[in-house]
Amino acid sequence: MSDLISLVDVSKSFTFKNTKTTALKNINFSIKPGDYISIVGPSGSGKSTLLNVLSLLAKPTSGCVLFNGKDSSKFSNRELSEVRASDIGFVFQEFNLLGDLTIFENVMLPTKYGGMGAIEGKERVLTLLNQLEIDHRINHYPHQLSGGQQQRVAIARALVNRPAILFADEPTGNLDDKSSKEVVKLLDKINDEGAAVCVVTHDTDVANIANIKVSLHSGDISHVK
Image (tube, rainbow, N blue to C red; front, side, top):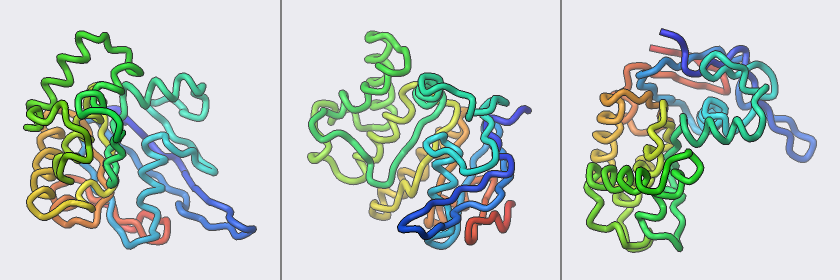
């Protein structure tokens, strides 16, 4: 099976006030269709940076990121936007829902950039919200929902364009225990349905359900199992 995403000798550094910090060091790593990967490690180890590079939200300082075998550094801005809209879903710890849009409007928004027609988009949104058991709050606004409900909406938004891979950065970090367990089940279900899932987490329940566990320490992959 060919790789969905591959990092080849990838490093990433940042410079702030003339001080250079290396977040990733010569990383070689691949994700295949259907993989379920958890990325763990102490704070400051480079987990979120790795996730951002894998999801094409950030460019490496050196090395190469291949997406479906193609060098992503050669993608135009339009091609990058199209890949992010159609092939990649991203779930944030802070949910990042738009407060002035209803739940339906938040989930519908990515369909406008993913090339989905209005009728198909509406049907897709309603189906997802029903599957995630949040359809009864469809006309509510984010501030009217609990944290767990907001995260379900964020997951629906990430899935609406049927991405090949779902990235999640600490998706249970702001949730209570009950809501966290619900999100763990949702991520497992998404993977069972065929999407690759890659999660940065401190939550052992989230980490242990993955079939591939990547440990980062000081920007190096110290262990993969």
